[in-house]
Every structure is written in C-alpha cells, then in structure tokens.
Length: 508
Image (cartoon, rainbow, N blue to C red; front, side, top):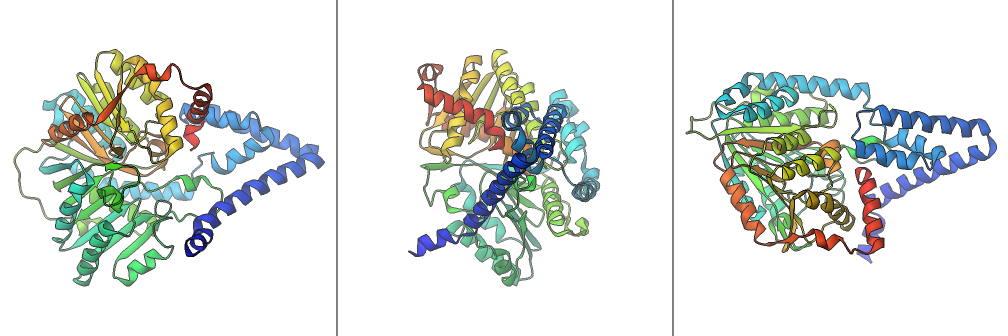
C-alpha cells in the first residue's frame, strides 16, 4: 500500500497529469472555438501555415522538420498552435543575452590557453578539429595532461573515491542522475567530511534526470550538510520547449587538478551493484594536469547560469601543473543548445570525415540524423572499417526499436553493427585510426546532439587511445554481429511500427 501511495502522490504523476490537462484544454478550446467561430478556425489555419513555412525555412535538422510537418499538416487547427507552444525553438532574448555574457566570460578565462596551431606537426586533420573547438566552443587544446581510461564504471568508482579524499580547496560535481546507494552514499560521505574541513563543495543535478531518484527538496538537504547545491531546470508542469533542455553532463572536478567525465552517472547500476538490464557497460576518463582548468570553467559557467552569479573564475585557477613527458593533446569540450552550434555533432562528423582506416563507435542509442547517417555510409563505401556496438538488452524498448530501424541503410553501405550480448552498453566513445578518440556524454540521438547540455574530451595522439581501442576489441568479442538478412523477412506490423518510430524519433 505504501508503494502504491508513493507512486500515486509522486510529483511525476502530478506533472504528467498537468501536462495532459493542458493538452486536453488546448484541444477542447480549439474544438469549441472552431465550432462557433469561423474566424477562429481560419486564424488557426493561418497559424499552421505560418508554422509550416517557419519550419521549412528554419535551420532545423531535416528530421525535426519532417516530424513536425507530419503533425501540423493532418491537424492544421491544432498542430500549428501546438508547435508554437513547445516546438518553435525560440530562445527568449533575456536568456540569450545572459548565456552570451557567460560564454564570453568563459572564452576570456580560457583564451590564453588556445594553441590549436601547435598541432601543425601532427597534420591538418588534427589542427582543423582543434581549431573548430577553440573558435566555436571556446575550448582549448592542452598538452601536459595525463589521461586514464576506465572501461567500466566498476573500475572508475574506487579511483573517484581516492581522488575525492585528496581534495584541499574545492570539489565540483555536475550529473544528470544521482541515486542513493553505495556509489552515491560513499561519495556523499566524503563530500560531507570535506565540507566540514572547509573545502568548498558544489553540486549540480538535473531535475528531470533525478525526478524518480531524489526528493524535491534534496538541494535543501545538501545545504544542511554544508554542500552548495543547485537543481538544473526545475521541471514545472507547463508546456514549454524549455522542458527539453536538460543537463546531461557528467563532471567531477577536484581542485582544478583532476577531472572525470564519461557516461557514468552516480547510481549503483552504473557500477553493476544493481542490475536492471543485464551487465552495464560504461566508460569514463580521468584527466590530470592543465586541461582540467577547462573542465573547471565549464562547471563554473553552468553554476553561474543556474544561480545568476557573476563570480571571479580566477580564484579557482590551480597553480601550474608539474611538467610531464609527452601526453598527446587533450581537449575537453562542451555543447549547449542555447547557442545553436551543434558542437557534439560536429566533433563526431569531423572524426568520421577524417578517418582513413577505421572508425570504432560504442553508443547506447543509434537514432541518427541525416548528416551522420550519410557520413557513416560514405566512410564505409570509401573502404573505411566502420564498426558500431549498441546494446542487446535495451533500457527503453521504443528507443531500442528505433535504433534497430536505423540498421538497414548502414548495413547496406557496409557498416558493421554489433549488439553487446551481456546487457546494456552506455559508453559514448569514438576511436579513429589509433590517432583520435573522444569519450564523453554525447549519445548518437537527437536529444544529445541538439537539445541537451553535453560534454566530452577529444584526444589526439594520447597514450590512452590504445586502451580505448583495446576495450572496443574486447567488447566486440562479447557482441553479436548483425546481418542484413535479419531484416528481410520482418513482420509487416513491426516494420510499420519501426518506420513510424523513426519518423517521429526527433520529437521523442
């Protein structure tokens, strides 16, 4: 009974019912006015025509255009108004101005570190990628930064605890999902201890990501423990495009000297202490050295965005790191949906375009846009060995079906696709030609590429690239090869279901 009452009175139920009520009220309003007022009916038609023209002429990804037009054209009275409410993509000038100011401050804090031209001895491909991230995302490339790759969350977890215990000045955490359990409780115990010692501890978590794992007042509970806490984009029951913009980043930063990122959230399933979808295969990367300052500025930028603060970033700048032997180039980067620059997608497309021998990809979702699909197919047709590993056991059934709906065109072009048999693979890794790699939070789906705040680390000639490739090859041995024959005799209803899901995937 307690569990039933908990579910019934959970705020997600209230939010869901509120949104449904708004949609129903909108539909009822349109129906009533359409019946009694011809002028209102034609007004709605004009709104839908305007919306359709705006969609066609916009810079919106083609998949979004098709999905929205398929909603508006059959339902012109309702569709145009619905699009203007939640699909227009308009960012208020107030938010644009505020974010622009924060981004300029971030660029100013990092500009002295810009060194893309130093990559010239490594070739034009390396320089182009580094230049793009510096010019369009204000994210510098660094040397003097050691990197360590973790092929499982189970392996990253003890190292995280070890590094947190060394904190002397500050600890910054930014995560999409936090859930009480051994993983988070172990970290929280250290955070409380460090806060009591005078270490500045800050935490950002996404409200949508933690809706089912944390109570609404969790930020206040953290404040009572001496931990500064902010909730990103409180989920309010009002239809708005703002609901789509989530903080999907995963950052752990200690004293500006050590930083972690990757696919791992702070919950027990990420370290296989709780099994929901078989074995959870994830990845993380540790940075130690100069490049961690860039990750620190990323966090402080988000903190200022959440709080409306304008603090001095320089007071968090660590002393110069010890000079290390050659570590390759390390370039942490971030992507925001508020500047209309699709950094995460551009990093992936640039890596695909520059590949000469192989492209190895691990991703939990393969819900790709036209540009990425074309790039992968063209690479395979040109003789590049393109291999992708996705999960065999899904976390969301409908996403799994739309992922499989994207297999046939890729397989026909020569892309090799595998499914990780033991369970769910959540790692978001690219490795190319033993020279380039990226590890981060960016999924190959529309939400990560176009709607969420994301982050990653681009690597060039870094020693850990060998470890990323070795992990891919080891994972390949545990995966099932997918052949095109499997899709030739599918049930017609399943084919139709997957086709519908694929069309509307950008809106999911």
